[in-house]
Amino acid sequence: MNCNNKSIELMHKYLDGDLSKGEETTLRMHLEECEACQKHFHELKRTITLIQSAEHISAPADFTSAVMKKLPTEKKSMKYTR
Amino acid sequence: MDQIIREKIKQVKKGDQSAFEDVVSFFQNKIYQHCFRMLGNAHEAEDMAQEAFIRAYVNIHSFDDNRKFSTWLYRIATNLTIDRIRKRKPDYFLDAEIKGTEGLDMYSQLASKERLPDEEVESIDLQRYIHQEISELPPKYRSIIMLRYLEEFSLQEISDILDIPLGTVKTRIHRGREALRKRLRHV
Image 1 (cartoon, helix red, strand yellow):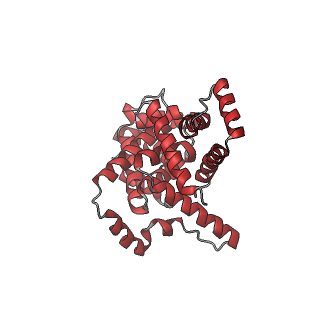
Image 2 (image 1 turned 120 degrees about the vertical axis):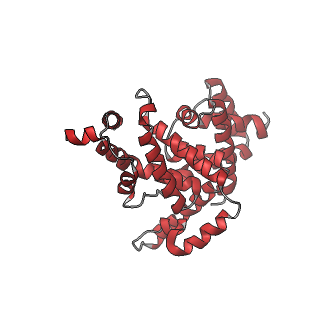
Image 3 (image 1 turned 45 degrees about the vertical axis):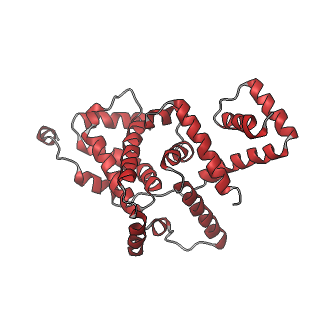
């Protein structure tokens, strides 16, 4: 297998859940014998873990009320029904 | 939650503005965060996130109830941020840094209010570094990486949000992962 193309393509298919049974076997057998691809695969999986650990950011405290103030005014009929 | 949102949207369509407040409140952090990561600064992120909700409200009758509201909302927000990036002057980033001295840059926004033990500080530094690396990806890769791994949409949903073919989403997510792998392998 050409390490630089075919197996890397299979790794990405694996990450997207698109790998067929046959392809899975091909990839696994290749990874067992190719250290460079093992490393590449490990780095890809670790990258995803790292992305998912990026800091969560919250909206400013007054965000919702700021949006509500900017909305066009409600139809009069609705106000009377409340 | 989807069911509650669906009910709220029905009420908004009937003209009940207060129902929309619950919708904004529920999605505010997600949409703000999405805009922040796309744009890289708090000032524009707030503007664009507000605008996204306002547009959703104004155009609520064009929203198809059989679709997922979150997909529709992210689509509005993503289009707004991409438009904004396109319209930026080349020197925009310098301005953003100057504004940052007034406490509006992204690092002050990310700063925690409480003092933390050393190891947590270290992990926050790492989280920031990762955020930084994501935000340096070209927008077309960045949006997909964020939607997939931070906002946990499926590839099909991402294809709907961005209105691009599934095959293109896959090509871009592969390239985005490879680009980040190179940037993050030494972490």
